[in-house]
Length: 173
View 1 (cartoon, helix red, strand yellow):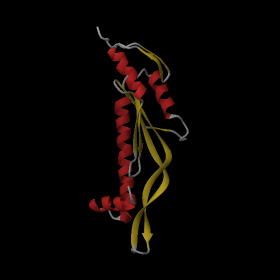
View 2: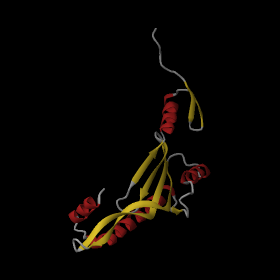
View 3: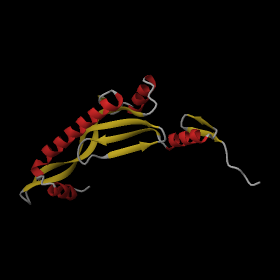
View 4: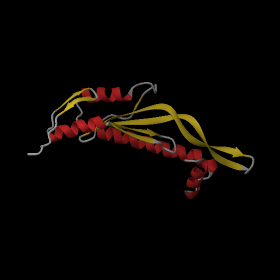
């Protein structure tokens, strides 16, 4: 999203460029508060802060899933500061007023980990600063494993690899 597109978005909502930061911080606070409530309601844990982006969030989620024997639904929500792209108001001499400019920053990201009956273990990574970049991560092998199990098709898997999948098709007779 370009700076001009962001300014157009803000203009359509009567947000002045100079007021952008306050608007964005209010939106961010609401997003984080809603995530906290959702996490507590769905899995009994609030959002857990992680001090380093290098911590493997997936390992934390698998550990909780195993210890609490979570079979489906939200496993947990974790947060940490990571690099992200956002916008800030910068005074422009040419126009005489603040313009929004893209910049790299560090901001809070939320990681939602789920175990879905059909799709398997998955996560959503959400940047909490506008423009709220989001990534949805699905593992196709998890989906395949669960599909094969539901269909009663034999397979041999080791970790994230399928070593054999039975051919249950009926050939010509």
